Length: 284
Image (tube, rainbow, N blue to C red; front, side, top):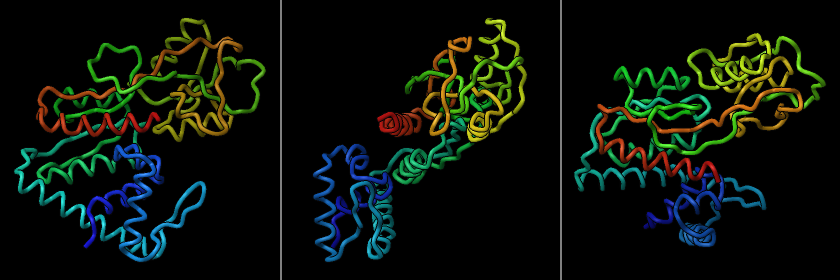
């Protein structure tokens, strides 16, 4: 018989793509996680992961076991929820800003729904201004996204600098008018950028309207336009333009969790714990 604790550790190592992240999520030491994997492999009598100094891959036997492990854990969660009569029932509509969507977040939400079989989660991806408007209209229960200089109530998850992103190729002087890549209205990054440029007396024109962070990055990488974005979104090939070229500083991007007044308090509390835990790991 397989030990459910060992199966959970195995699945977490695979989902989190590493022993360190798995240890953080499970609140264990890395050596304890390694020990769990060794015990599971001893039970199976075969290696489950091919380990290198930088990564690990599933062996053929690991590929077979991972599917069974997920099913066993799902049945375990379902049995627990049914027998303890979990009170969470109903549909929860969550709005997530485009720069927040990650597979790990969706897996965390999926795990929460699996732990409460009466809970149904629908996710909508859009810009924060549109999502907050939908929440006020009663179309969403939760919104996760970034804002700038707002009076909107919401749980602060973290904040980071909003920067002017540009290709790593050098810029000698600012082109006039300044070409910008922006999200459509209502977008906090757009509003902050246009306001700061107007206050600094810098002419601008929107040369690219983007529906995703990938579009903003492409415009900046190509040297086609300057894009306001959160510092964590920069990645390889982008640099930050600033005061050396006369660009004004931008406010911080605040990543917040907003909940609707009409939402079920118990559901919101359960999901909020999952989201806060995900964010604490995301920032490490």
